[in-house]
Amino acid sequence: MAQLPTDGSIAVRIEYFAVLREHVGRAQEELRTTATTVGELYGELDRRYAFPALGRVKVAVNDEFRDWSSPVRDGDFVVFIPPVAGG
Figure (cartoon, helix red, strand yellow):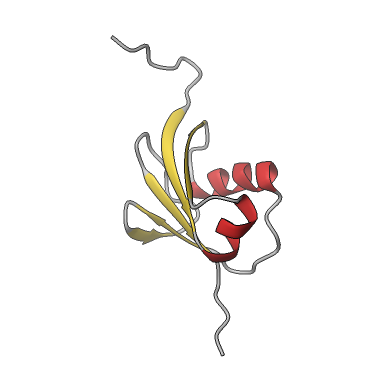
């Protein structure tokens, strides 16, 4: 039987769109985090990847748009969607 982590971390799957995908160099990743909200998770990823200033990034958890104070739980699928410029 697999051992559960004892550090309080959870496993999440992240998907990046547009400029975030280009900046990170991948469309998605799975990671362990101790973040408790999507805002904390984004902050953790920003510290790791030094995201460019983007303005209002939207976030969805398990295919539903959420606000930045929404909880993130083990097994969640989190998508970060930067603003897109149109012409």
